[in-house]
Each structure stands twice: as C-alpha cells, then as structure tokens.
Image (tube, rainbow, N blue to C red; front, side):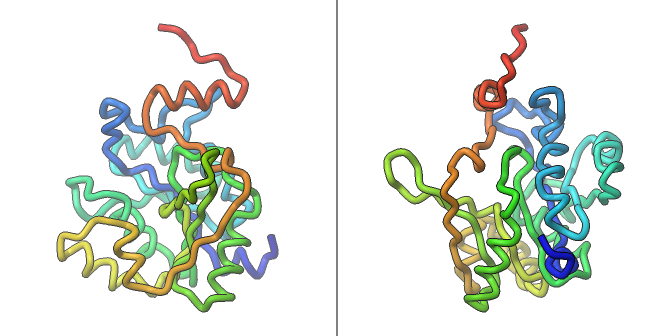
Amino acid sequence: MTHDLRSRLTGLVLAGGRGTRMGGLDKGLQLLAGEPLALRAAKRIAGQVGCVLISANRHIDEYKRLAAPFHARIVEDASCDFPGPLAGILAGLRATSKELLLCVPCDTPALPDDLAARLVDALDAAQADVAFASTTNAEGHRCPHPVVAVMRTCLADDLAAWLDAGERKVRTWYERHKSVQVHFQDERAFYNANSLHELAELERAFGVEPKRS
C-alpha cells in the first residue's frame, strides 16, 4: 500500500446498527477471540488508509476507547432511528476531506490486506463512483458485498437527498451512479457474523472454542 494511495483514503468501520439479529446487542462490541469485532475490522484496514472513522450510535465512550490506538474518530448518524448502513456511510462521507472513503462492516474481521488497493484500482480504471467487493460461494454463485466498498466522497450530497427521500437500499443507491464489482477469490476473507450463532462459527474459524454459558 503506497503512501499516495493512503493519502486519498479514509476508512470507515460501520458499527452503528441495531444488531437486530443479535438480539439488540451492539454488534461491534461483541468479542471474537477476546477482541471487539469493530476493533478487529479497524485493524484490518488501518494500514490501508490514511485515517480511520468508526460509525457508532450507542456506547460512544466505549467506542472512543476502542478507537484511541488508531487515533480514530467516532461518527454518529444524523438521524436517531437507525436508518441503516447508508446513514453511517453518509456520516463518514461528511467527516472526511479526502477524495475516497473505504467502508467496511464491523463484523467482517478477516478482510484482505489488498482490499483498498484493488477496489481503488478498479474504481480508477473504470472511472467509476463506487467499487464494491464480491466473491463466489461453494455453489458457484456470485455474492456481492455492497458495504465493502470504496466510493467518492463527492457523493455525499446525493446520498443525503436519497436518504431524505426515505430510500434505504445500498445497491439501489449505487445504481444511481457508475459502480463496479471487484471479485475476490478468498470467500473466507468476507465471512461475517450477523447473529450470535454466526459469531460462534467465526470463533471456531479463528481457532477459538466459544465459551459455554
């Protein structure tokens, strides 16, 4: 990762959701092998970007402590009703003066070391506005990962208007702009944990036997 590329990029860890499928728990603060998921995600991208933001809407003091080693800032949604990942992305777009924003979900702790470089290369080559990751599953089906993406920060006003109109779907907003998918071979690098069961599976994948209650 070159200094020139890092100078163009801010990283954003999305940890501001309701955690509905985790019973309302704050997903980013759930532990994987003893570390909060959001911390693991931040570590994965910290060396790939110039600075790190964490989108959070609860337990702000805890996230500030988590972010301190990265000199990261916490950004909160403008709305208090948990409108979804696009609201967190908008907060990130508004919080940086850099050209590009790399956004990743907090529950994907093994993202590739070349994630930012490959997404930016594809964005530049296609002169696109958004580049997002995809993989192929065991059945041979393409699996998009729309919130693992690099986008131009000049999209902030358009996204704000989109949200003000009541729209929420990430892929539908991308379709308003020139977007490209970037295929990654290692599906395991994009494994995530939407539920406590999936978090236990990730623990096993990381070689840690989940604790029994």
